[in-house]
Length: 337
Image (cartoon, rainbow, N blue to C red; front, side, top):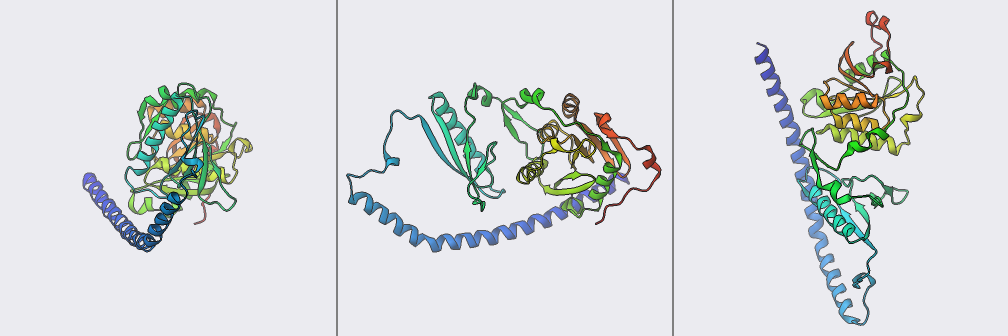
């Protein structure tokens, strides 16, 4: 009976996912038609500009634009990297960034520094400076200077866990000892309030079960809720939101720490990202991997799994939880929908 019920649940989940993807397909097709119409309307203008530029280039052969000059003693190279604003475009962004990375390696071997200007929301960087107060969607990126053995570090590819099988280059664990989390005492009532808020939250995850959900909490209150096909995308969105709003969890009072919730497993990558965000508490409705457990122990990060209603398992750093045994016999403080 249990197996039959589980199969029916899976069938319903697939049917709900099919409805979502069908709607996405229709929206994408509509946007594609509009984009094609705009492209066709702009084509005569582009042809005229191209013809005009060609005539101007032959009209004054003695003039040569500085960008067209060949330099033998290049000290600095520039890149304009164009990526998409949305996903669902196959390997386009991956291939573009792979080509840029390969060229950066070549320039590094030649002793040439590089700077890049990135256009598109999908270009993820470590150092980002928004161009213009209005948010023009343009980022100026500078590569880290003096990275020793860049070629050797990027030669090793590690396949990460998660939906779609991600990849990372280099050894991110080398900087693990340099991470320190803020001191925290998290009340047990805040944990119950978090679980209840997630229970009441309307989401695609509830209706289809085909996405991951992540949320950021402070003082038992949900500050941000994000859903995405991949849990890594969801936590990255939260990290960006915290940066844009100037939120610094390491400056929070010891009895009011920031906490992070995810519907996915507590993997080593999720633990590492939470630590880099300076969030000392991570909660999941799922379990924890062995590497995630070992990393959380090493960092002193409090990980809580299997959190439903008043039941949970505290895997690491139980001293962070401010235990309140009396809550086991009292109603949970309900969040408002």
